[in-house]
Length: 116
Length: 309
Image 1 (tube, chains in turn blue, brown):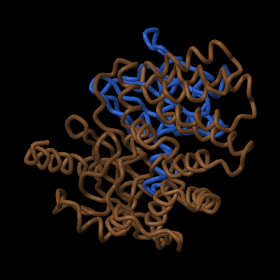
Image 2 (cartoon, chains in turn purple, brown):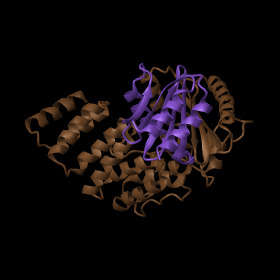
Image 3 (tube, each protein chain N blue to C red):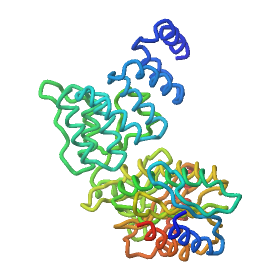
Image 4 (cartoon, rainbow over the protein chains, first blue to last red):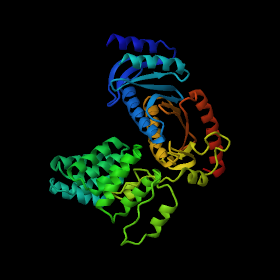
């Protein structure tokens, strides 16, 4: 893994409640780099996150909101966070429901910059 | 229908090069068997790689699979082969509109109507897109009387069900686009569910999981009503979120927050089959937008309960 990306993912993973984070190709949902708990299915997270991001991007355009910069899906048993990054990548984080989203967001934005 | 499929299958089995593969794929699509329909259509296209009808059919199948990018690609290939293909033009117009590109849809549908001025489906779709853009509706051909239904559709911006699984089945080759009217008209027509909340008729939208507007409203930057367009696009987000949550064992999804260039969006389910969107300016903190969404969610839930919905 590229050291900068590895460090960026490592910083995200230090946030309490984070189960894993990864760089994903936005177009096809393929994992580019990851740091995950063993129980997390990285390929599934990547594919689904990329698909969801595409859907939201289209819907946001329809509402006149413009390009999506950060996406958060909260569910009863977990939270999925997605931040678009340069080079058609996404930074994706899977976390517990009560994770500090603000802190995750900051680290994910740094991770997005690291991909430039 | 199953007898049709059997008969068409028999014809195709006897002559694998037959163009009847399009009819068979279409019959399977109408039955909701999208994967089998796609296999049949792709099999036919492998033998007839320049067959525009085949690509048009693939476009409709992908709409049924809720895969608009692939539908758009298929219609693009149909148009590359046959630039005036009516089904592909209408399909492309539908796909562009659903993707939020109303201007692109307008251009394609104008092309469809120019080449096929008697086609009511193209005219209705074009009228709908024009209304969404605040442009006067297309006049019918001078030699054709305006049908009563068409007149009502123009004068009353009644939303047309945009469900891709339903529309192409009832109007083959003529995907409908959701109707929209001026923001003021829409606000006057829809129930005041969110009265008291800021942006009650311009920034808060209640819609169902098939993309039909239920209450509230959403206006575009130019003040035009974009409720139907937004509802159609957001319904797809809801189903994708449900699939994601299910596959990843996250339980039921509760909210989706999208921070975008010009606005923050909060999407939340309101009971079975209903969804809420709250849009706030980019400068409004996400936490505050979430609080507003909670209030709107409660109001919507109570209103739906009163309606017995």
